Image 1 (tube, rainbow, N blue to C red):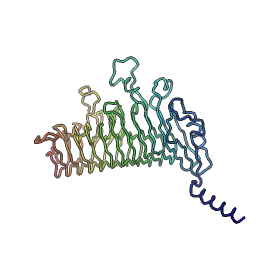
Image 2 (spheres, rainbow, N blue to C red):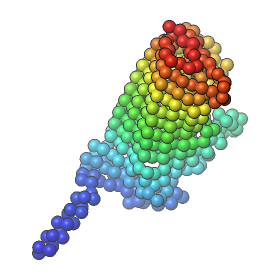
Image 3 (cartoon, one colour):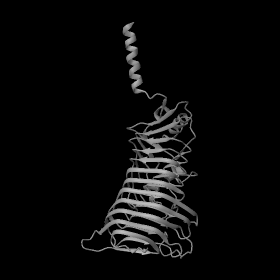
Image 4 (cartoon, helix red, strand yellow):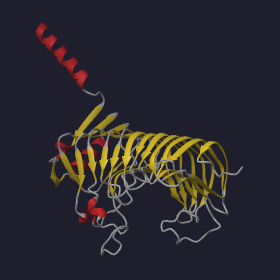
Length: 402
């Protein structure tokens, strides 16, 4: 009897050490997934999410096991959910269909999306592959004369109205367009993600933030055919740090105001990051027809390696240069600080601040800027149009006026 009691105590101790109290697991294999990468496993994911979302526990975990590949069609995982926290653990590989017909009569902009899920935690050691080449080869941007070309293509991961969410330790490749979209969300945290697509892949932003607030992105490596990170309309309190960006178009605020919209982007801090072989570094771009404000922005402690435009404000942005007529409207850009920026430029103009004649930029400050040419002995220049601001310790010599 004493031996039996001792055995039960040992078993109880082991169970307490290995189980998560108050957590239910929902493994997609238990819902019929094959994990072979050949047949559609979408229904297994839908069913696992359904049960996790309605679980009567403080926390629930959807498990995507390692060592397997799961083929998924476009899916939307809806909330709100009953558990206080939902963990979506991706340890295996998830791939999109290579057939564009899979999206027939569906939203072309979406592959995997989460909507209205509070305290969602997506993480793991797994891979998400958007199979983007099938879409890039049909892109109207690169193949305008191709019959059936498409301007719209799926985003690998969308977080829509997902407050207090997290995305971490995930590898995302070959998105048809944007890799990660964070929209209409508050308190979202991105950490230690790797995002990669070819340098010539169209519109493949790494992470795009839209209409969201109190967002932190850190400790990530991003190389794509478009912006490593882009910040869209109605976003504020954004902290971006420790990003390795390249190839790509840099870290951008914008483009903003394309359709004459009212814009408000403020309290943006981009810091402690590096850019290698990118077309831009620290960029703000707005359309002339836009209105509103971009203000209270800090670019700080950035390193550039062979970057075309290390520092650039383009208040006259036009997707087809030379086709946009001058407008008397514009997005007001003010209180923008550049501090401790170093590195090399691959073009002659390392600082290019091109602002509107009618809505000039103001409160621009340059402090401790050291940029040199990738060509030994070649001097660089700065270009400032309709800009008011100050400078301290800037090379190449700035053209700001007080």
